[in-house]
Image (cartoon, rainbow, N blue to C red; front, side):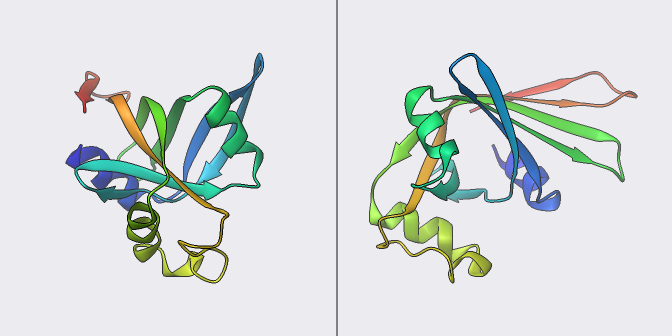
Length: 132
């Protein structure tokens, strides 16, 4: 998990894939934080991505490091954590979001990644899989 967190912090824009019915939906994301030994992402309650993860919590994350030519793909189940402490912990790592979200605004939502499998790949090395 530490290796995944490090990669996503060093390559801060990743793409989150969800499903809306039978249609895949992919968008850039940027939040990733460790809280209580789990990796968390954050979004807004009013966004379609929130409704998509509630309806079908199976997600994928994909990120690319241009300097090394390595990419990461994480498959996981997104589990909503409704605790204020979790929302506050994630927002604490992202001061730039604090003008749009707060732990108590009724809009900030956080999900942790459960049953995650992360695959680091490149064109020059064998894939490496990490589970957490």
